[in-house]
Length: 243
Length: 243
Image (cartoon, rainbow over all chains, first blue to last red; front, side):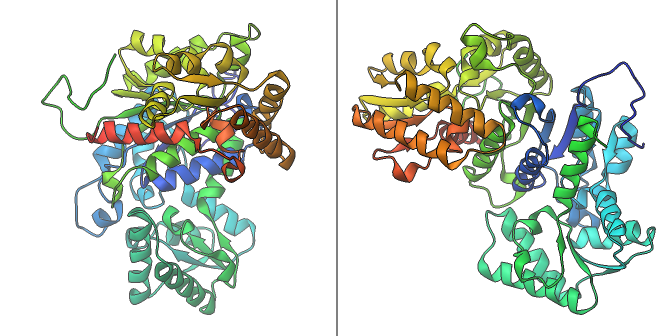
């Protein structure tokens, strides 16, 4: 389902109600909601994007399931999407990269227009003329090929961490989810980002909302992209009719 | 409707789904959601509080309406509360002090248990043995007597800014809502807080979620209470069964 600023129902006026399937994790959803407010040029409450956030942190671990371990998150995700649809949402945003291995099909089922964090980021990289992008993400996101596939379709190449480096990325993500990353996690993430740049990545994609909360971008030698911010910007534009 | 950790239905297990009626303003709701995550002792996503946030920033200005100007926010608030009820929420939290002039009746109507930001704060002041509290709030909150009444019932006295000072408070709140307070707004708020302490306030209640975002508590000579954080703590306890 494609979403443009032209609505099927020309009678409808005012902003679109945005559904946010969040809680994966909660801190990342708070971060996304904050960015959505920041990326909206409003001078009073009433100029902001109306949102409904379904923040269910009980969704089973998306990455573990993609690696063949742990419960299927699909029923939880479907329940959230259906609740957002019932609440009157027209646009769906999911500030969890890994969940995008599951949500496009569920959004289609529900007839909700998904603004994909993966596609929005791939669009931004392509628009910047980038040829090779390094991806920091959960192992599930990498194994599912979410960025590799979206970038391949646009003629870009993906560089991923090697196995020992990926274990450090996974440890940093878990640390953020458990309440905060230690300096050692932050340093490890920075080293992994650096190594991707050394291998030719022109951009680092912080493709897990927890990584954005733990990576010091000032020590990375190439620009680092925040998919959550790109998603927030696109959602604000779509909801308020500027896109 | 009173809410305790003992549920009517002893069969129900797991955390309670919390409904957050937010968007008033959006930045204050982001702030509250962040505090809810911080105030939850969880070591993984799945240990956090499940929430549904109805973030409709189009609700007409609560304070203006209480001053006899502007549209009645009641239908907007009712719509949000009903949507949260339909989504399965059991507990209602509203991170907007001024809205508490309207929401207790609407929560009762919907059969949702409101955790009142006013009552939670008044409880905390009384538990601390405070006799006199200074209140920084919208003019609507003051005129509606929300804190004055809740504190009076507990034997406490309220000190409010005089009229010129209140105009500065109002200007600072509007500045936060329009995207950020200037240093001049921050300094004015600090001066007003200081004057309440000079008049005998043992605590400053930052009784508008925007004030928390703009007041530098380090320059206030008495402790400053953040009702949004007190609300987050109580909601986390109730939702997870610790209260």
